[in-house]
Amino acid sequence: MTDQRTDLPKELPKELHGVFPYLVPPTAPDGSIKTDVLGRLCDDMIKAGVHGLTPLGSTGEFAYLGREQRAIVVKATVEATARRVPVIAGVASTSTADAVAQARAYQALGVDGILAILEAYFPVKDAQVEAYFRAIADAVDIPVVIYTNPNFQRSDLTLDVIARLAEHPRIQYIKDASNNTGRLLSIINRCGDKMRVFAASAHIPAAVMLIGGVGWMAGPACIVPRESVKLYDLCKAGRWDEAIALQRKLWRVNEVFARFNLAACIKAGLEMQGYAVGDPIAPQTPLTAEERQIVEDVLGGLG
Image 1 (tube, rainbow, N blue to C red):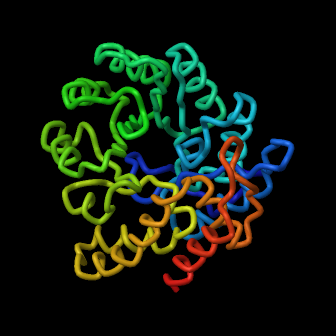
Image 2: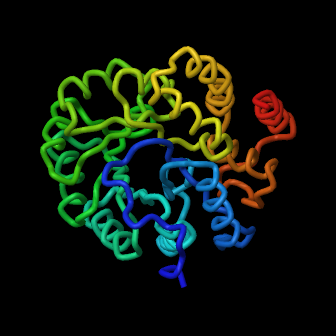
């Protein structure tokens, strides 16, 4: 039935760019994935103009889902998206073998790329970090976005490792969630077009795109998709005065989400917008009534 649709692109973009919301996994109290809600969310994000979707990112609560739940989320996202935009699925593990297995499984489910995340229980050295990402990229034949967040991980990607990984034909993008924008410029200067940079919610997206970034991958884009796409369009058009004015408004969303649990904020915001995504997965807890009001006030101020 999907093949009969006339509104689908004949071919997805060859290069990733633009706004990629990190989808939350809608869950029922028993832990089951509410695929109908996820499907509606995907459809609405695409209608809002986003350029791709990322299940199992950090906002996607990958650390709290089991293997079967993750597969259900990826499968439901691929089916709902129906090749209208690229799906870049998160792969995360403390084990190289497990990460490789995830990447292969998600490619088999039809994803268009992999967001590779290294989870480290013990610190690992540069050579081990590099080998982990290379193993994932060697296991698939779709683009790989490498992800690093030194604020929460026990390992980081040094500039030397990033430069070496940029030589891999499938490792073409990085989402660096440090709050060091200068580091992003160093990556761009050192790697050029071999490693294109996506902004994270820890960065000011307009500033990242000004220095050469190709877009924004982040959870907050789930609740402000149209505004996020407009910001990207303004940046691409070089209309920087308008872009900065919009960025100032949108930064209030980043600020409030930095105060509280990210998944709890996104899920609360989506619930306010009519999506029954449920509570954040335990041991995370929902926002308090006072915290929800803060989120609601911020979202209301964007109108």
